[in-house]
Length: 366
Image (cartoon, rainbow, N blue to C red; front, side, top):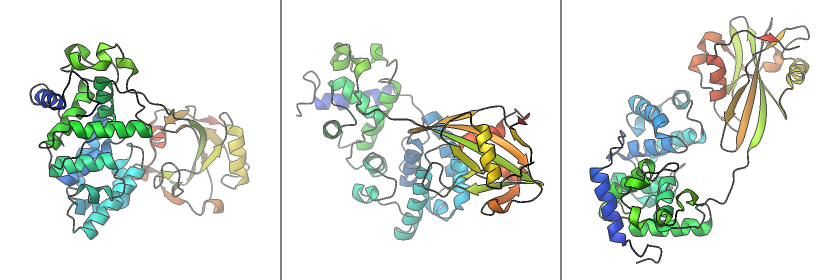
């Protein structure tokens, strides 16, 4: 037995207690629980990366409805896939989803690979997701280690190593595999994740009714709020976007973001990025200098300021509108689309927030 296990809690007792709780006291309902279809498990896991279950549920159901099989997803119009993904964020997940679906369809004849090693080779799949698919779909003995598992193990076994350190990751993975019920890996993995999500929660955990209360190092030493430990702090970058809704007749200019930056493959209006806020007049001056709007064209600014927080950056957006008499040559790389067809295009959340806004009275920007 590993020296990581608590002297009062044998490995076998941990899994027995956990599975007993899972069978009798766990009421967490999700449509993919108990699922054996590797495609559906993969889809749910990718959607739930960086996404709360409550938010991801509707997306999962919508994807399954539109793309019942991996072959359906592989054959789908990519713009439709991105539109269905709209609002989930972290769009590299969607790009990887499409690429992997095509690879499975073309190289595996539409049959999801059934070994941990082959699953791990798929684009957008790391050790956690590969373990989840392998254990849930194929009952292979691979332990999942996600945020819920880190938290449960850190607290119960009193592990103070940082979960984002090399030493910590190794220690948690070794313990997770040791605790894994090798005969029922899928059921065990689901149980420990559910336990972390519903009992051993990040904030206000249910320690008073916890089945591990008398064994839990964090509880007995009053360190529940101190574990798990994370050593790296995310540095936030601030960005300031000035979007110009330039209208000619009934059409507006949009383009697909193709650069390797946030929101790749989503659409946007002509954009000027400046290094600080409250520079609306400078943005208008630049738009005029680039020929987007004429020197005498009225430019109006939307009174609301829109903000969106991403993992490593915060976006502040200002929206400006202008009506032009002709399609500017400087916007020749933009697509001119009917304004009433905008809902069919996939946009970042911050632009959708603007489009849904009820504030319609713009004021002159200059």
